[in-house]
Image 1 (tube, rainbow, N blue to C red):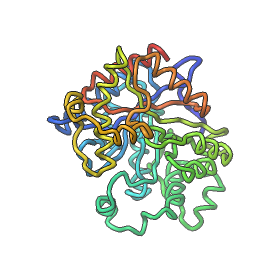
Image 2 (image 1 turned 135 degrees about the vertical axis):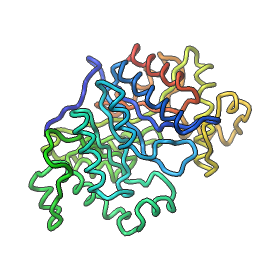
Image 3 (image 1 turned 135 degrees about the horizontal axis):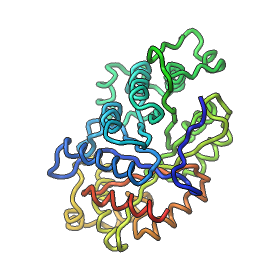
Image 4 (image 1 turned 90 degrees about the horizontal axis):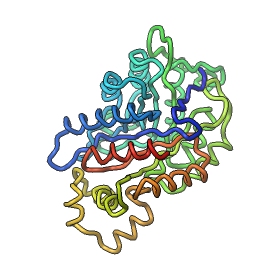
Length: 345
């Protein structure tokens, strides 16, 4: 297994896209998935490196409940871009199921599949229990073992990993693989950072909802042990951005994401509202202060402003790749952001 990280942007850090197939007010799950497909096609056309979809359950604004199913569809409707999970929430699934799904995706789209693994359930406790039917495999203590099992079933048979599995001999995820998906560990804390380093895996930090990227990235690099999968640390920072022709227009288009962020904190979730509805709602001083501490979208403004902020983030963290996400009500506003970044990065 070798490092096959894409580098489509010459002399720059590669850019990628994270999507949740968000559902807007008055729109169906089918329309959300059509928009996700169109966004992936735009990212493919514009030269972005990766397009990842997240796993969330029982959320009114998210249609991306099953990344492998969506990735199979996206693979059939794109040409070049790497496709992956950002991430599959492993506590929700048996490792063999995940390994089989992604081995099959890799067989369908060789060299284009990433398996990003996360530790959080991506939902509430009741839904998480319904996904697994029991709770004994959902504890933090089991997570490293399940990650290693998944890796081994996907062809990572380095001796130290097999030794760590002990009597749990790995099964084969597919009969005769010619290639395997690229495995990443996702996280927003020191736990995942350290684990990714110790296993010699690529690491993606969720800066779009967690503030302290630098501490986690430094811990990952200090913990890193070269492996058959990766010979040196490789970090991707996931962050959020929205670009428009003026700063005022960008702030207006970011309104729905602010409403969604506040709804998430209060537990009053709903579909993505329109910018007009967000403007009519307004925000209290306390809400604005909360969003200043943890913005719904980290970089909002003109292309010049946003690119400067993203370059500063790369300089601070030494990121090898950046992944861009962000809520908007209309698909075209997200495509405009991707086009502006591609032109100015």
